[in-house]
Image (cartoon, rainbow, N blue to C red; front, side):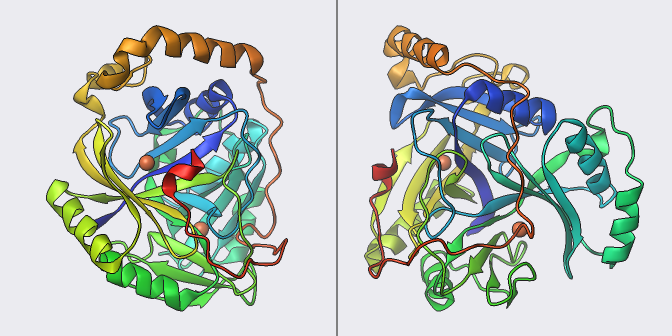
Length: 363
Ligand SMILES: [Fe+2]
Ligand SMILES: [Fe+2]
């Protein structure tokens, strides 16, 4: 039923820095420039491939006044994009370093080769390719010593789609049961996290993509905080409204609190939380981003959902005021990426009770 990832939504402090980074530095296209439908005086920015393909969209709420986020339970660790070939990784490293971005890797894992970076707000991003050629770490280090000179993003570097998202869990049994019962997603494998002994990588997915969710699990995981530089929610795709309705019925049957189905104009959404407090969404593939703009004009001007159009002047005035108070700094001072990149460091004691928050309380 669930077809992998649909989009991942995060929080940024400055839409213009965010736009320049995701379009100029990562080579994505802004496919929708709109407002947060639950908080219409703040922007919602969508970046994806040229066509806005499902599973390629990274989206941001601009909330300059929000606190910085903290990774932990309820606040996912990172997201990963795929590239078409492994040679793209040293190219990305050379390109990102030339732009002043903090980069780590490429690391050879048993099943993948990955490069890690941080966006200007501190978001952890992985660029990955399956390690089908069994590349050794030694080979990668050699590659690293002979990085190419990259003056622009080459076609073969294109970020294809999300490979996975990584939330954090403190009880793998509950996680596995939850995804099986609610969405029919299975735990394909669990293995030690090479970046932090004592923690595990727990794969959740469907047959085609058995690990589109790669939880890091640790009994010492501490509660996170959603804020600037962190993931707000992870959306998974279903083919149509009928499939979404089946999931809603299942959630109701299991007594899991949810938002009900919400019309987001470009797709329909259903929100709920996993047992660790991570906000999840089930979104339909259609109607799609071209519902109100032709493909060639996607993301070029401020689009409001039709029911907010009458408030356009008021909204634009508020957004202008936000920009005046929040000037752009470019190039940004990029935060440095942690090494090893997929480790979590406990920072405080885990609260006893499981917090299952209302999804709207984040807004
Ligand atoms: Fe990862
Ligand atoms: Fe969403």
